Length: 358
Image: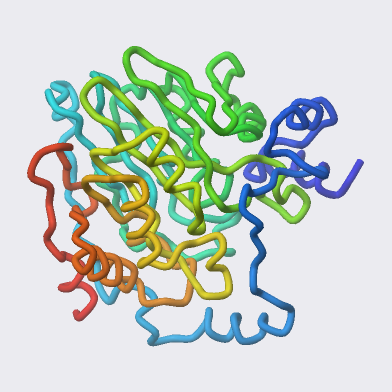
């Protein structure tokens, strides 16, 4: 038995073990080549051993504005508000990439990392900026669908899955992620696992797994052993694109041509660096991605919750909104917990300014 298999068996947060049967299934995917999942665009990181000391020094430096100077404004949600779903599709942002979507009388959670630290052990990471969430997990209504983009800790959280398990009807994930959920107690019958360009319809909402340019893995031994994805969520009322993590590439224009246009695109804009630009877009690239997608409105996500890069915590949204204004792209920037009614007047207040200069 390999060291990875032993650690996975002993530490539940690491997820499910890779087996020969699973590999045989993954080998049927066009994305699996030479023993692992691959990006459609050649992708390499510009991080070398010689860079590690400098990165570590910068990571632990103080007074860099990498975290907020005060509490972020979090709007608390009254649980009673969920008993009368709005006529129009609505979403609520929880920070980072976690979003509650109300669509076609269904509650859909996107990448619900609702824990304190995006790591297998608390001492390995920094705490969430906000001490509270807009609503506690046990106050949420029953969830019709939980949608997962990939298996990194800031998108797939062991503790959050355990709390959501009793109230979630269906889990929709990209290929390879199901084994983690099964390891944590989710019934295989409640999991739908999709490859790129595969889709499933629940009620009148279609969930389509679409490409991203990223990677996967919850340990040193399972890198690229599950797929990463973006998602298209379509109903008779609206069409939404959800991009959790991705480097820029031609796949955005291809998705826009095949599945767009989109009323709203939820687009990664934070945790970037020139050394890993291939897997995390710069904010200006994120704006171009939304344009490529043919999005009417873009909402920057993947920021305002965790420090996972070296830039100031507020820089992603400032660069994103500045570039969007320059290119004529409409943007919405809700506070954490602030409801956004899609295809209506959306919030645009630069709320982060009061915190960043405090």
